[in-house]
Image (cartoon, rainbow, N blue to C red):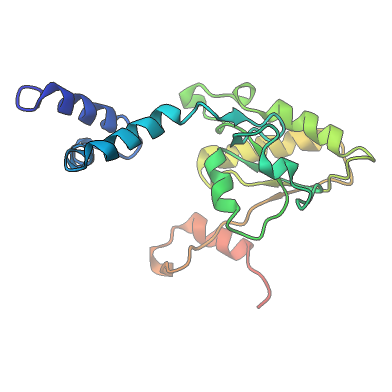
Length: 207
């Protein structure tokens, strides 16, 4: 491709191809789409990419990305200090904020994955445990930890590990829960796998 296309075009296709879920064909389409845009549009895109991390900070309380430290969620007096939702990445918070959840968050920074060389020590599990011990003091009032890692093998293993570590703290007034897993809206029972069906039954509610 480098012999057919100009070097600048080939370079951009290569860079796009490094993005998650972007293959060579999608990278080519994006590149040629940009070629059809005005110089100003391309300049605006380039500037937005250059400015992406300039103003960003990591909240030292929940480890979400923000332009402020603490972040807007941690600063809000409307949030429920009695509940902490544990998630893998900041993008999970974006999804959960579309629900009625009004508690706080703790971003782990990934999941336990031995095949990728990621152990508990590579995540923010120790920071979570320190926070739990602090917030369950009489002045804190923490009542529940919700483990909201993905329903993947790595996500389940991470949730189980954290649950065991919390249990070791011996905090009788702290409840540890796991988000329910089941059938997504619009799915068919006949195509669901055994684990999904079992989780759907376990998470059933009164109707």
